[in-house]
Image (tube, rainbow over all chains, first blue to last red; front, side, top):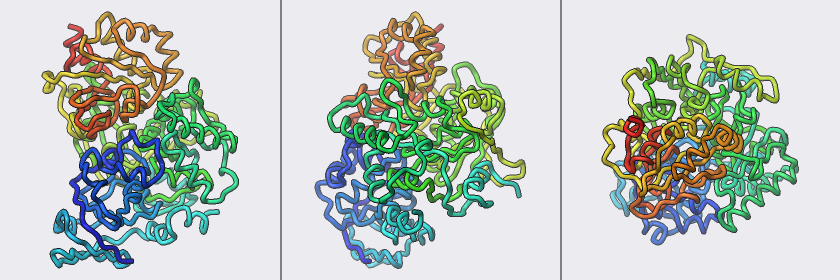
Length: 163
Length: 420
C-alpha cells in the first residue's frame, strides 16, 4: 500500500498528553479526538492537517500515558502513518493493535523537513521524500507485530488465532 | 547463563523457557482497566465476539480517573464500565466510596502477588513490581483481548539493573531515588526494557517507598519495574493474598543489559522541573520558585506513609496564604487510616483541602486544574506540557516532604526550612 502526504515534523519525546490532552479522555470517537490532536504543542495541526498527511518525529514518540486515544486521535484526523526515530513502547503496540502504520526510520527523520511531500510504500518500508528526491528504508517490523498489523489489528488477529 | 526474574516470570506464563528479545503470547493473572481506558476496551471486547470474559476473578475494574464523575460524559463512561462489570459478574469491581486509585488499591487488596504477570490499561501498571509481580502497561485493545482470551502478546524485555548503595539522608525517599534513576538514563533510557531496583538503600525502603519507585519506572520508558521480594514484601503480601504465590528472583549470573550504581549517601531531595520527569535538580537549587498550588496524592505518592511524612512537616503550620494545597489519599483505607492517625486534622488545620480518592489533578482531569501561568509542585508522576491544566502552566514533581514544605513556604523549599 502506498501513502502520500505532507510532513508534519515534531521533536523528541512527544508524549501522549501532547497528542491528546487528558481533558478529552472522556471522549472515544476518533474524529472528535482528532479535532484536539496536538493542540497544546501545535495548535494549527488539527485545523490544517489533511487526510493522508504524515507525522514525522524524533526519538521516543508517544511516551507517557497508555491512552489509546492518542493513536486514535491521529487516525481520526486522517494521519496515514507516523515515522519516528523511535517509539515509546505502549504507543508502538497501540498502533500495531489498531492498525495505524508506524515506521522507525532515523535517517529519514534527519533528512525530511516540515512541509515536505512524502511517498511511503508500507509493504517494502521505502520512504521517498518527493520534495528532495531522497529515498530511505525503514527498519523492518518485528514478525509478530507485522502479522498482527497484516491481520488488520489485534482484534482480527485474536479472532483468527486466540479464540 | 542464569535468568532474570523478568525472564523467569515470562517463562512461567508461557510454559517454556523464554529469553529477552523473544516474542511470545503469555497467560496473564490479572487484567486491569479504569474509567478512561475501559470504554474503548468494552467497544473492542464486543468486536471480538467473545460471549464471556476469560475469568471473572482475574479482571479488576476501577473507576478512578474522572471520578467521582466530573461531567455527564464521564458519568456515561463510568456507567458503561459498571454495566460491563455487572454483565460479566466481575469480582473485582470497585465502586466510588469503596475504591481507590488503581495502583494503590490492587496491592492493598492482595491482587498483585510475587511471580504474577499483570497487565493494565494504564501506563503506571509497572507499580506492582514492588510486590514482586510483573505489571505491564497496555492499551485498551490489548485489555479487551486479554479480558476475552486471558492471553496477550509481548516481547520479553532485557533488564537494566540499578544498584542503590549507601544510607538515605532524612527527607530523602523512594521518589528521590526514582527521579535520580530517570535523570540518569533519560525518559527513554529503558525503552522496551525492564528495570530492577536493588541495593542496600532499596532494602531499607518501606513498601510504600518501593511502590513509588516502581510506579515511575515508566517515566524512563520502562516496560516494567521489579524489586526482588524480601521479608518486607512477604510480610506485606501474605496476609492479603487470596491465592498461593511463588516469588521469583534474578539468578546471580543472569544477564543484565546494563548495571548502574548510584550512591545515595550525599543525595538531597530532588525535584523534576518542567516539562520532563528527567529534568531533575536538587531542591536547594530551586528555592526561588514560587508556587500557586500544591498536590499531595496520586498513584505515586498518595499512600499512608506519604501522608504521614507530609503531615509531619505541616503539623502546627499553615499553608502559605497564596497557595492552594490539595491532599488526596490514594484509597479509602488510606483515608480511614489518615483519619485514625489524626493526619486529616493536621491537613485541615493547616488550611489544606482533603479529598476522596481520585486521579483528578495528576492528569489535569478535575479538582485542581491549573490556570495560565500558574505553577504547582506535586507528588504526582508527570510534568509534561499542560499535564495539570493550561499549556502555559508548570508542574514540579517532588517527594511529599518537599511538596508539603513548599506549600508552607509558598515557594519550592526543603522541610528543614519549615521545621527549623
